[in-house]
Image 1 (cartoon, rainbow, N blue to C red):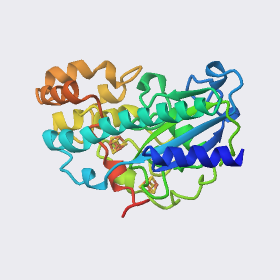
Image 2 (cartoon, rainbow, N blue to C red):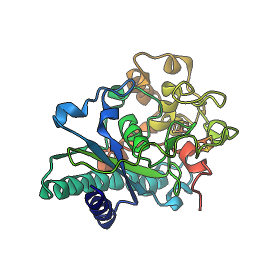
Image 3 (spheres, rainbow, N blue to C red):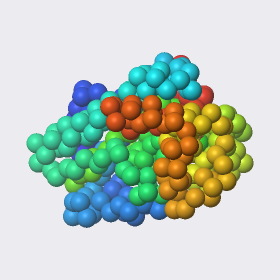
Length: 276
Ligand code: SF4
Ligand code: SF4
């Protein structure tokens, strides 16, 4: 078991993962507010191999209100590294199959409507697996914080029936200091309540104002009341806002050309954890 775990982690690093951890698959069954049962994918699933890729810090230095600059640097990097994480997951799964086990890569993209808990920029399922694999902890900004890169990471994972040594959630409670409120204070749409803990401190509709680009397109820091109160979520009223703010056309052009990415990442950029 020890030898196979070492080989998987070394292989993950050799194909580009910044760090690899192992979670107990038993704990992944039916996470809160998320439809997921690893036993439906592999009957005798035992572990999950989680990993992350580091985002370059410089892409967070661009002017967050400049559509072209954001898209061509940070947006492009997000889309590229998400695809890279999917490919790494595929390669790790292949590696495990060659070792004689079943292995299924988990997509880095999960529709927001099917991932109902907490922050939107990273899928909740991937955060959940990564936390249980000892790669970090969910910080106040509802993002996975890692030791060396804070929340500036793309997360991927593979579930398998390979018996691997489990790292466990050993960074929980160690990375996001109780007194820090920086992400909440810097979030212009006020999506994060600085005085509560995840997931009860996060307003998804307010975050969607930033993530969808409505913040940039409108020039308004905070969303109007119909956006905040929209059900099941603010994507319902997004088409009306696209008609109201012509600048959305430029955002949509980029998204159709390079793929979708979070237009706002301020909480990620300002988090001091893992800053170089
Ligand atoms: S800073 Fe942006 S991405 Fe972060 S919570 Fe606020 S709106 Fe969402
Ligand atoms: S900015 Fe501070 S409060 Fe927010 S996630 Fe990072 S360490 Fe935690």
